[in-house]
Amino acid sequence: MLASLVVGFDVTILSLALPAMAADLGANNVQLQWFVTSYTLVFAAGMIPAGMLGDRFGRRKVLLGALVIFGVSSLACAYSTASGAFIGARAVLGLGAALIMPTTLSLLPVMFSDEERPKAIGAVAGAAMLAYPLGPILGGYLLNHFWWGSVFLINVPVVIIAFLAVWAWLPESKAKQAKRFDVGGLVFSSVGLAAMTYGVIQGGEKGWDDVTALAPLLGGLLAVVVFVLWERRAAEPLVDLSLFASARFTSGTMLGTVINFTMFGVLFTMPQYYQAVLGTDAMGSGLRLLPMVGGLLVGVSAAPKTAKALGPKAAVGIGFALLAAALFYGATTDTGSGTGLAAAWTAAYGLGLGLALPTAMDAALGALSTDSAGVGSAVNQSIRTLGGSFGAAILGAVLNSGYRGELELGGLPAKAQDAVRDSVFGGLGVAKAVKSPALADAVKSAFVHGLDVVLVVSGALGLLGVLLAVVWLPRHVGQSAADPAESEHEAADAV
Image (tube, rainbow, N blue to C red; front, side):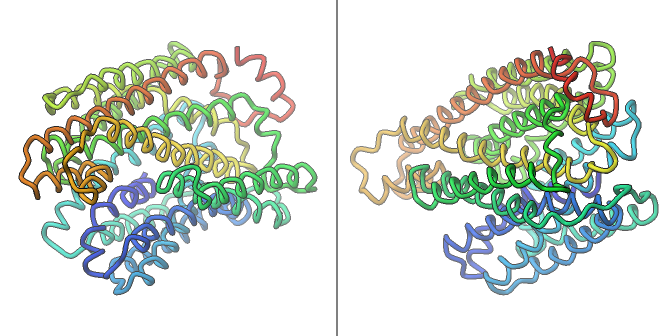
């Protein structure tokens, strides 16, 4: 839980510090983009190799090493004095996160029984989600009182406590028989995931027809195809592709990916809504995400009992139905809506998320054997992370399209029009500069329209999750580590 919390902090805190870092480090827009991208690319490329290292050398050893890397690189980020040094430190931080996440997930099917595992998954998921509002709250406080590097120092005490806890309490586990290094599998999987992630980032920034987006996307897709062909011929493949014949693993992974996709619609747009439309600061927007976390914690605690009483199909289906209904309700937001409406629907969304996520993840992780837990968890995490990246880019484009389509900017100079179209904050800045309350109201109205469109699309994805759960998810997901021979029977059991 502590390891998940510290990685979750890092996802939310950097964006708060970027303005101060740009001024202090003299960073231009390209360097600011690489502050984010260097972490993301290493994180994407490193997860499957990290899972392999845990299986081969021991998950406890890898997690201890990962926490040291994460803590030291956090210190390096905090005390960087140049943009290049910070980008390098962020890349190493991404390596630490890549080692932490699949290793943490791989411990759950190994350490916990079928009955305990959903509770453990819910606890780890709840810790990661708790970081989303806590990050802006703590980060906002630190930025108001200290220098920008202080936001990275949050990681250090959590890492120290996690390291001591892992050292004292965590049992060692690894595959019974170490496989040979599948060099081709490592290279093709890492290159493919990193290239596709970079292509998605570029697509969100520059458009999907830009060569800097298309080339890495297509190159990454080609690398993934080569990876699959390589794994089918390898004597000791990095990833046992028969894992995807398991209805539990595949459906659980896909449902988790849909959840990640919808989460972007909430976690990216709502802080902007709170700050631009309701006028809060970063700390205030973090506080306003707490109802979602409260709903999540209630849902997570109720999920195992719900799945036991109604079955996993019903539990996950109800969770997705609830989060979809909440998103559609959220799409009724207008410029006159206040914190009450947002708190109501985000709490309901969190409740649905808490009901769906642990059972869906249990389906995927429960299908892993002790020997394949590391790599299998890494594959699950990689697919869900890539799905989240596509969600960020696609729903970001939906938000921009909805926002820009509602703007009427006649009479403004071309440079001012570009600033307004760039973002809601740019639009409010122009309105303040020209002293036009009418323009500020129009910018807020256009943004809320884009927000509503994003939530409708996210709600539709929630309905897709209901369909996938009912049609695809097996009736029983509790039995651990099915023998590969059983996989062909699982597909029939899914319906």
